[in-house]
Length: 610
Image 1: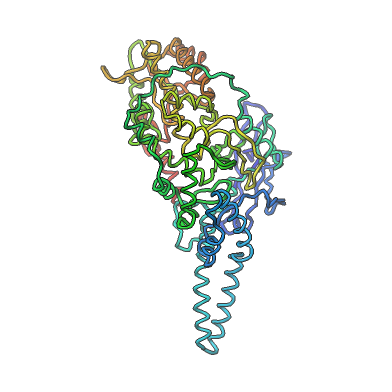
Image 2: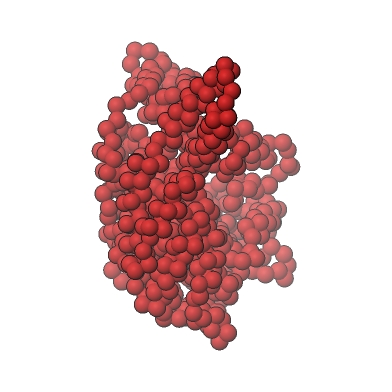
């Protein structure tokens, strides 16, 4: 059932030398209990007289929810109801803007759901009761009317059960069990478990004190992200970076970008989205547009076309809900969550058609050292290069040693400066109208945390790329390419001394996959100073920040311990004896045994067992 508060349930020893602590006690429940008591929680209370901490199990904690703070969600099960198409046809208007039409439809759907669609579970129980009564009557007397009524009710029950299954399938976010096999119970259980796992009930504040009050937790989270997306810790002016580095787009490539977007581009974008992907603030998922395209398609296509003609977005269209996804098993601080933005599908159609046009040119704009989100480049290419580099470093001999820096950019998406993004697009010589479109989409949206299922107070960010926007990964890669240019310039000047894995082989100075950065250089204090200067220049210009605590340095075997210490003291980055994993794959440094890929096999096994 998980837990909140401190991690360990048993401890012994009163001095640092003899102190030992373990988590020995756990609370388990079966799926039936978890579904029955969905809000049940386990809290580790403080240690008192005993070596064991008390476990407080609360089955039904008191909760006060404000229904006005819960976002609207389009239910895919509504599409199966006989009167939905009629409601849509009567409600949808092509004479108003698409956002206004969606807003009007949303209000009518709320009333229709309450008055017509109703409670699926209640309707199912009523049908089962009526069918049971008819079948009991048929045992005493058979009439054509009763038989016809039983058949009608059975067909209606099939529809209701399909609606029920679809409701829980949509809520479960399940990827490995298909809808349509009457897996309602499985979807229901999966939904409850996912919600409990994602619910945030306690976190440590900046002083390391546990906070469990929901209003205080919400205030803590909103305050953190308002500061993260602000420009408080950023210098006023963008540092000058060399404008050269990007390959010049040919006339044909520029014509491709200048070609007008047509309705078929919008249709392709709609059907490229997963049906049940989480919606944005307006609540409409891709399944709504896909199933109702005959009615809403013309209006949606006009909306997208008007944006590219006028370079203007309706107020609030690029606003987003932000959900917090844990990056670790048991997060204790707000920094251990990844913010994912849930953008409106209508807005994502705009950025989606732009991505479908732009990504074919990314191999031209992005150098060979960067392989994420680039067509025909694979993560396995990076893994092989790093594996070969580590293997060579293990066998390196001679006076000159090598070093590998595995850098962690702190909140790489969230720290990108918008003026740096614009400067980067100009350096890449993108057409002016494309720069205007992208800046309109990325700059100035309002954001709201979705805190335990309820909307928090909105705030307006001053920087950052939103994870969840189809355009953001490509813009992040484009911005990080400026760091590649700085490294290339430093190498060309003879300042940065890269390594060679073979005699006469190519120089290897860096390899990137999204925000996973690997740098290579000769092992010396002078080289680490060169690397620091390059990184400081890039960070000052882009708004990025290297997390020294999470970054690591790996040295070849011929580097002395004294030199290692001098380099790590200069850089502030710790050294490591083994490069354990890269992009989720273990880096092989000795003979392969059954434990080498044990973690990967364990993850696969846990998926198969649910």
